[in-house]
Amino acid sequence: MTTVPGRTAAGTDTIRHHHPDQSADFHRLLLGPTMVYSGGYWEDGEGLTETLDEAQERKLDRFVELAGAAGARRVLDVGCGWGTMLNRLTVVHGVAHAVGLTLSRAQEEFITGFGNPRISARVESWADHAPRELYDAAFCINALEHFVPYALGPRERAEMYGAFFGKVGGALKPGARFVLHTITVGRRPAGDRLLDDLRFLRHSELHDAHIPHLHELARAADDVFDIIEIVNERESFAVACRAWLERLARCRDIAVVLAGEESVTRVERCLGILAATLEDKYFSNLRLTLARR
Image (cartoon, rainbow, N blue to C red; front, side, top):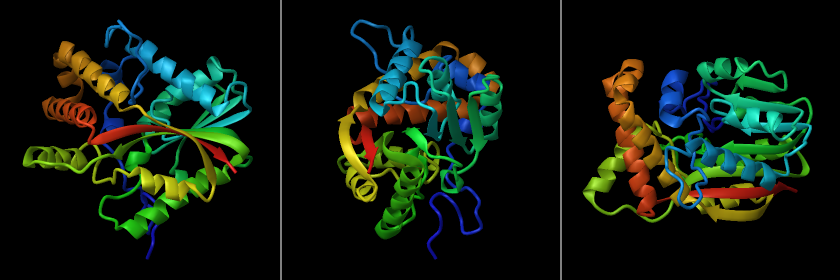
């Protein structure tokens, strides 16, 4: 039986990664006040940690520009994390109402704590989301990696990715844009050390989720979206991983108090593996700009 993407037949969410279940305080310590777990846009000469927040805000602003979301009435963020994009859409870019979907109760409570009446954060799978009216734009920023189980075969994966793009497309007005940021697999791994690192990453950070290939995404999106642009931003994510590692090293004692030694060690290894695999071009980090047909 084919199940809904990221869900068992009984409807229980299965694809999670460990970071959302850490406290908001731990994430602020690691990621900086913006609390965005994605690559940033640094300018030449800027320090990694000193301008981490500015780099993340530049990226979000660029995404808003690509999606044509400034001043929109309704915008969707699938896998909204700690709500930074939702807040920036409404406070900086004049969006009337921003809806975020998350599987983390802690994230939903944190976002509600903004006290921003123009934001709605929902603990809800994208597969269950049924908007009362269509959106003017949508985003999914480094969340898609966690939506499809690793154990599935190519046909089942294709069905799930197709369901994802169909669901997002069905929630958008014709012509509306969808900006998707996701890690994808580039070349095949070589060497036992890399294979061991990838297994560790899959069983911890990615929690047995499938990292897509570009061709899987392109085929799945083709029935619903026109592809406007694809940009590989692997370097920006690798730099962000190095910045987070640097931040963590500076305040490691506090991080251990907040999350425990085992969790901190796991995060350090995961970020190191992500940075190295991006730098070695095993992983890519693609920014896709899509338009609803």
